[in-house]
Image (cartoon, rainbow, N blue to C red):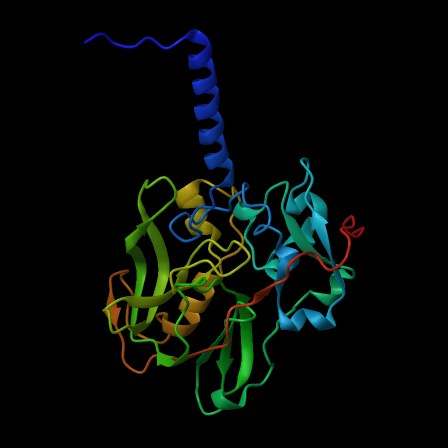
Length: 299
């Protein structure tokens, strides 16, 4: 049997068609935001953080800003970049030109911003109490009901939501890594530094509070992620000057050596760990920005 010969013109058409399909798939595919924790520049709609609605922002005047090719969060806001990052629940590794962030009209409005109550009655009788608000994507550390400090968080996304209810930290593991998920590109198991276990599900899956990338929205498989630029520098070689270290702060406050015996970095089961209350539902996504995009305010 002879092989059929395809005309050159047909070959050109076929190659063009296949190339279009491959390019289209690459551009339109939306990667998993948990198995691939990096931000996705291809996913323009989901990377418009002005669409993520947090109830606490109703009292703060802000506007969307579309990041330009020359922009970095430091160049835009100087020393105030930390407040803007926290306001958007995002880390520097996930900020890139082409995405939209929330910018306050008055920077003073977001310095020391927290969406959580300064006093929380259910925590009043507890020496230490952790409150996680999924709707606000925020974690608060309470001492006898008073808010000691609070930090942004990244909880489970739709389909892999963080369980709600009352739990208690029962283990710590300062050098924990995920047994299920890897970094983008399957290079290594995803690091979960400063991990505090608060729940084991009926399927034997453990849920932790730990260091994680924060992309500005719910993104995990159910764990609660906190800033840790030291982990990001070690794993992704960025940023050069780690400053955001919330996972270390929460870990030291909740289960550090001032509370328990020497921490050698291994898995350590604990007794009478802080209570963890997780409340709320996923934040709502607006169909489009509410107000026109404007330039950032002058510093």
